Every structure is written in C-alpha cells, then in structure tokens.
Length: 458
Ligand SMILES: Nc1ncnc2c1ncn2[C@@H]1O[C@H](COP(=O)(O)OP(=O)(O)OP(=O)(O)O)[C@@H](O)[C@H]1O
Image (cartoon, rainbow, N blue to C red; front, side, top):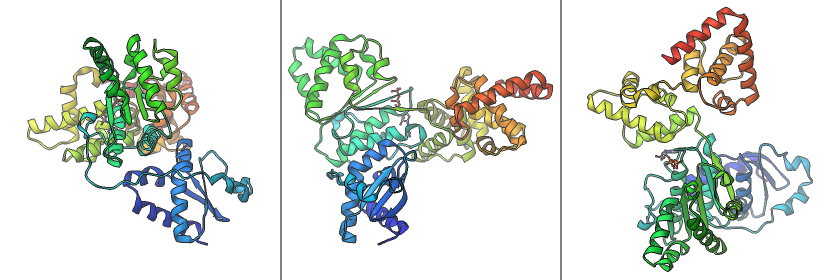
C-alpha cells in the first residue's frame, strides 16, 4: 500500500492531467492529505462547501482513477478543519460505507479556445482565469465553479450577495463562460434584473409574451444580476416567480446576485425570498491587502504595464472596499504616466490619484495606510503588526494601529481583525479599549497618537 505522501502526489498528478488548471487549483490545491490507513484516506478541505463538493464529485473521480492504477477501491473522507479526523473517531470499516455514494461525473474540460455564444452577453474578460481568489471570495468562487461544472445539481439557485464592486458580476459571467466551454451548445443567458423587467414590460406592450417566455425559460443557465432592483416591481416579480419555477422544475441552473440577502430586499415577495433560500447563499466580502495587490498585479500584467511592486502596494493601500475603484485607480495612474511620458513610480501614483480623484478619496484613511504609518512611526514592520509576537515593542504599536483603524475608518471590528492577520474581533475591541484607557493617563502615548492622527489626515 502506498504511503500518504506518495498516494497524494499520485492523486495530484493524475488529477492535474485530467482536469483544467482552475479545477485543480480550486479543489485539489486547497486540500491537504491528513491520514491514509486501512485503504481510507482522510483529506482536509477549507469549508463545508468544499467538503460537499468533494463527497459528491471529486471523491468518486479519484476513487475510480485510483482503482484503475492500484487495483482496489479506496475510501476517501473529506473533512473541514473544524471536524475531527474520522479515522480517529470511528471504526474505519463503518465509515467506509459512507462514501459508497453514487458517482456523479465531473465534466472533463479541455484547453481549446473558448467558444462564446453571442446572445449570452458575457464579458470576455470576466472568466475564472482572470478572477483572483482570496479569503473574502473563496467560497463564492468555489460555489461558482461547482455550479458551472455541474449545473442544476448542487446549489440551485446559487445566490451571491455582497457590497458594490466585489466581483459578483465577474463570477456570474465566469460561470457562463465555463459552462459554455464544457458544453458549447448550452444556452446561457445573463441579464440584469432591470433588463429582465424591461424585456417583460416590452413583451406586454408588443404582445409578445410567448416569445419572452420562450427566451427565458428555454435556457440551461439563467444569470440575473442585481436583483435588489426587483423591489417595488410587482408584475415583474410575478413573472420572475414563474420563470424561476419553470427553470427549477426542469433542473436548469439559476444564479442570482444582490447587494444584500433576499430577506433584506424591501418588498420582495415572500415566496421569492423562500425560493431563493432553497439553494445556497454565499457572500463576498472585501479583499484583504494581499488579494488587492494580486488583483492589481494581474491587471497590470494583462495591460502590459510596468509597475514597481512598491507602487502596487501603495495603490492597494488606498482602496480597500471596492475592486472597481481599485482597478480604476490603476488605470488612472497609467493614463497619468502616459500623458506625462514618464515611468510609473509611487510618487507619480500619489500625484495621479490626488489630482484625478478629487479630495474626497484622499481624505479617506484606510487600514493599510494606518498600518504603514504606525509601522514606520514605531520602527516595526507591517508584518509584525499583523503577526502574533507578544513583545511590548510590537504589542503597543499593534494596539495603536487597531485603535486608529477603529477610530478613523468605517471598518467593522471583524474586518479590522481580518486585516491584522486574521485576528478575532474581540482582540480588536480589547486593543481599542486598552489604548483608550491608556491615553487618559499617558501623555507620551497621547502625543504619539495625536501625531499619527495628524499625519494620517494630512
Ligand atoms: N477577485 C477578483 N479578481 C479579479 N478582478 C476582480 C475580482 N473581483 C472583482 N474584480 C473586478 O472588479 C470589477 C468590479 O467587479 P463586478 O462588476 O463583478 O462587481 P459587482 O460585485 O458585480 O458590483 P456591483 O454590485 O456594482 O454590480 C470588475 O472589473 C471585476 O473584473
């Protein structure tokens, strides 16, 4: 019997040969082999969503693949980091029967050039390949890939929600592209909720309701963006209800997005709210600093821009809640450089963002600006601020930075914790309260914090 490492390496190689890079990256690269004993392999995956997808789709594939090479069937038990190792908990023989689920077949992808169906109205740029995965969107991305690969099976409907410019539309289009790549004859339709409403009203005015129904109910994948705009539109909601039912009954995939959860959309009919909850709702939260840099780097590469890393970090530090703005900033910097026929530097970026972005933005203090400033001020590194070392020379600056993040930005405690190396929100609260208390009795600290505040707001 192979050992754990050899077996895992073998699985990785086999999977890599048979599936696309994106499939490999999403399901295999994020997994960790834990134990292999009694022909049972325990694998740790990042979330319940990953675990379910493994159980239903990845596991049967690997079991078959291995049976061919090893000559016998192994059992694979995926688990999340929170769940105990089933081999330590149960008798493995009992656990075995667990995984004898029916194999669902993963669609094999190829690297052929993409075929786009024109009327799907998909933006060519919005694919899985160009989507940067980070903590805030990892689940949404995995769910998107799962429905693209096996539409109508896993999560129907799939519902994305989250703030403006965080990649909901991008993921929806990516699902469409991926599905067409797997099955070029598939019918994919992407619309905003407003286009759906307009099409519906037009169809009534022109007496073409049957055509409208044909168009919306004869698809394999319907993507409806920004459904918060269904609020108030009673007739449209009614029609969408029937569209939804027809597609759902036919096991066709529905993907929806909104800036909030269905039950938070005012005047959305209860029966729609409850249907939207049948599948999976997954939120997208703002990207952390590292993800923002990765997004900028990708974009810079795609645009063939020559930008120093330091400048990318600078731009990533200026915008922390909307990727559209982040990308816009990069393009502004590029335009500024080409107008002035100079190379892109951090100084030029600062200049470009100042003159092109108005005062509003420049007055806005972000968590990474605070971290950079505090690190410099106290002669520590940003990594130390985000780290867990508990020496006083780092703890006080770290707590000051958390204090200022709470005071000077709109970010929530969990969000601040996330930006400080994934700390719990109670740690941030504790830091805030501690510094607030110290300020009353420690004039040195009071002066330092005042100086930092003044510099940040300058
Ligand atoms: N993870 C990501 N990797 C690369 N680009 C991204 C990512 N997330 C968002 N973007 C880019 O940011 C821009 C805004 O994203 P998108 O339009 O998908 O946001 P949205 O959540 O749908 O916003 P809205 O609520 O305004 O509709 C797009 O250009 C998109 O390509």
